[in-house]
Structures are given as structure tokens and as C-alpha cells.
Image (cartoon, rainbow, N blue to C red; front, side, top):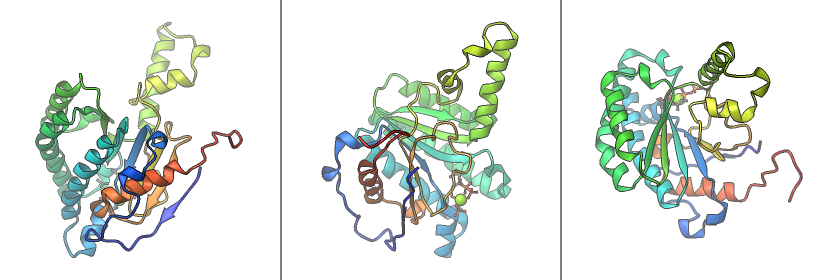
Length: 260
Ligand code: IPE
Ligand code: IPE
Ligand code: MG
């Protein structure tokens, strides 16, 4: 996997880095971009603000990047919003994250519908508060007929948990005589995951500099390209997103083969 880092001293006030969308080669854009939106807390603390302020600002970045991706005709954008490990955080931070998620789902529905995005989630959403589950369902229902970009939120998501669930499901099928164990192949495993029917991510972006996947889409990222920026999620701009896409378009993806 190609690994690239970008240290940047740019702030939210800086002009966007190149390239502008017109310079992006549309033929070489990823079909599916997945983003580990990290660094909200550190960004806020560096500004002398409480961590939750970083989450609030991070929600603004979500709006900006969702629109930017849809405008470029990206097929799917998956955003890591809450991991299955994030429950280790203090109760006050978790309750703010739940508040923010509910608010985002309510306030953005109009815009999601206007842009004709197809809304999906992955992760154990049945463990989220009922009010959030209701808002998720409402947005799914209102957008299921759309053919625009799929906006997929990873909520209470963990890659290992997702694989465990898939294995249990297949094991039950074998036990009940519906499935021959020898028939289990990669396609069947892929379609037993939450991401069934979705393309694997071509590009994974991680903000705030950490060089790890933090239990994100473990099965699906086997041949994803990784792009890491030092910028924290609240300061990640449309220009940074375009820069990631531009770098992706110049990558040589070999999938174990030789150069074309
Ligand atoms: C990402 O920012 C948002 C979530 C994980 C919910 P963090 O909250 O992880 O911010 P840092 O990494 O501590 O700065
Ligand atoms: C990954 O960020 C999860 C999300 C962005 C939702 P974390 O902040 O939880 O990851 P670690 O703890 O640094 O690995
Ligand atoms: Mg973090």
C-alpha cells in the first residue's frame, strides 16, 4: 500500500491548496472515498477551547466535504463518525456527540434530499438512542430512491465486529443446512458485511496525522490507497480534499500485478 503524508502549516484562513476541481482528471477519480475524520479534540484544545467545540466545527467540515464530493460525481463517500471503541470516552463527550449527530441528521436532511444523495449507515445503529435511530430511518426512507452519491455514515462501527457478525450469519446458514461451507468465498463474505453491495473504498483519507486504521473497514481496505494529512478535521478544507484526489489520480495501483 502506498503511504503518503502531508505536513501542512495551512490554517482555515489560508487559501485552498491546488488543484482546483477543473484540474482534476475526472476519469481518474476514486469511485468510493472513505474518511477517518480525526483530530477534532486536539484542534479545539490547541485553540484553548473544550474538545466538544472541535466536534461542532467538525460537523461544518462534514457539510463542506459531502457537497464537494457530490459535485465531483464521486459514487460513494463513507465517513467514520463513531467507532465501537469510542464508547470509552467520557460520558459528557459521548452525550454531546449524540446531540450533534441528532442535530446533523435533522438539519442536513433537506440538503441531502436537495442534492439527491442516497443515505446509508454501517455499524450497530440499533445500539444508538431511539431518537437518532428514528432520524436515520427517516433520512434513509426519504432518499432510498435517489441515484446520486451514496453518503454512508459509519456509526458505532467496528471492522472486527462487522466481520464477527458476518461469520455468525454464515455459520447459522451452514448449521441450518442452507449453505455448503465450501461455497463460502470472498464475494459471499463481502455480501455478508454491512457494506454489502457497496464498492470497496479506492481511497482512505485520515486527518490529524495518525498512521492507523482504528478498526475502520478492515476487510474492505485491502487494496485501498491511503492518504494522511496533518490537518485536523475541523480545518480540513475542500482544497485539501481536492489535493487528496489529485494525489490519488497519480497513484499507480498494481493490485499485486505489474505496471501497466
Ligand atoms: C474525531 O476526533 C471524532 C471522533 C472520534 C468522534 P477525536 O475526538 O478523535 O479528536 P482527537 O483525535 O482526540 O483530537
Ligand atoms: C477513529 O478516531 C474513529 C473516528 C474518527 C470516528 P479515534 O480518535 O477514535 O482513533 P484512535 O483512538 O486515535 O485510534
Ligand atoms: Mg481521535
